[in-house]
Amino acid sequence: MNTKNKQTVLIPVDFTDYSMRACAVGFEYAYQNNAEVVFLNAYYSSLIHSSLSYLGVKQDVTDKESVAMALKRAEEGMNCMKTDIDTQTRAGKLPSVECKYIIREGLPEDVIIAYSNDIQPAMIVMGTRGKSRKNLDLIGSVTAEIIEHTQFPLLAIPENVVFNNLNDAENVAFAVSFKQQDLTAFDRFNSLLKGYCPSIHLFNISTSHDEWNEIRLTGTREYLQKHYPELSIIFTVLDDMDLLLAIEKFVQEKSIDVIALTTYRHSMIDRIFNPSIARKMLFHTNTALLVIPSSQCVSRDVSP
Figure (cartoon, rainbow, N blue to C red):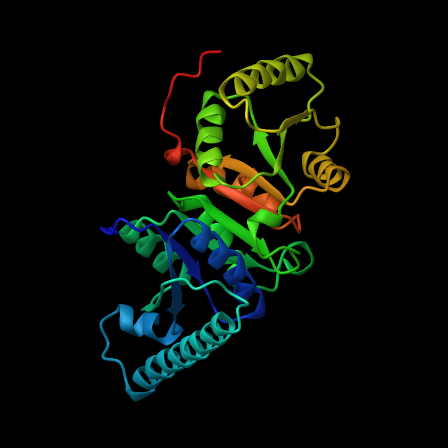
């Protein structure tokens, strides 16, 4: 657990251009929230986890060399990144933020989940290739796994996002499914974006032609206008069509920079046959995603 008063922004990296793309956004967020940045790299050698090792057979020299080489590559990558970060900071391209550089052995998703549970970050910021390269990236796939399991807010940044600072995100969309958790999640969302002033677009994540959608959205609007009068909130009912296509159309028409949504825990069977909307959107959109786990949504009085 992070025992310091200072908050932490965790940025997992694999030294690819698009994982580094998330660094600028994470740095700016940390700076504006007086947080420190922790860069985390997980190195993995498949030989370590071979069936022979599992059966207790002693590793040979090749196994040990493989581990050493994987660690060496990780250390070299982290040293190069540190040099680049220092250079950009001195040049004024990145704000001055306290940083730590951590290397851990293991599968990336396991390492990131375990480490985040230890330090309890205010935000995890990860890069992904986005819509056009969905089957070719490692960190993007890892990001999808973290979305399903993390207990902490996660900001997924596609490689072609145009902003380096959330201050430059003019339009942020917040998805609602008309559950009580939506309102408590919005409270968490509002605290994460405290100090930023985007226009907030609420939209429903059900495209079934149901008049109750508009009735529920009206009730949600009245609640939010009462409790957050300082916010600029716009309400939209998605078109009656395929959900992902409707969201894509909505994003284009409203020039959405970030989509925020809540995730809920599912069983393994559900994750296989009915993946979360957040996971689907990660591979279907070139828009940044802010994912708020339902575990972050502390119950509160949500009466109008």
